[in-house]
Image (tube, rainbow, N blue to C red; front, side, top):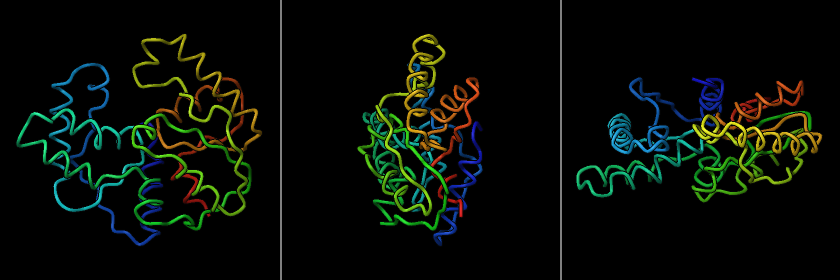
Length: 226
């Protein structure tokens, strides 16, 4: 809802690579806002709904590290004492992949035919750490024709969004995104790439309010450029 262009780009990218894409109409939010706010039972209901919607054998690709982590890590935890739903949670978790993970580690694809003429840096979204992912985005960026990758200082430092964290602790959140913005500006990059809509919204909003022209892109949005 916040960045539909990321979803559209993911579909175009996967179709370019020869995949058939299905988008179940009944899918909703993964339930992470409930989970992060302490509403465990509501999160369980959301988890069960998602498991039902994505029943079957198809691989599930998620253009969001936080949503992927919710499905892969938290669903099995939430449903661990439910003998009916825990196996189903594990089954869905096993065939669910964050986009970069799917491209690099499942498909073994590094060059997707993308082109970007300029300097690019990468903000490492926090939930990639929870998934045990590191370096996949950089590997993909290294194969974008015309792009020069510029490392970001404090790469893995949170941008300060954290979902409801930014609402509950606005002063702390603002200080954190200011630090992130300054690190991005110090790279001289034309674009900053990340894998989560929340990070992109927070960083992009701060850059915009400060009158900066750095382009803020989801990984999929960059990889579909030719």
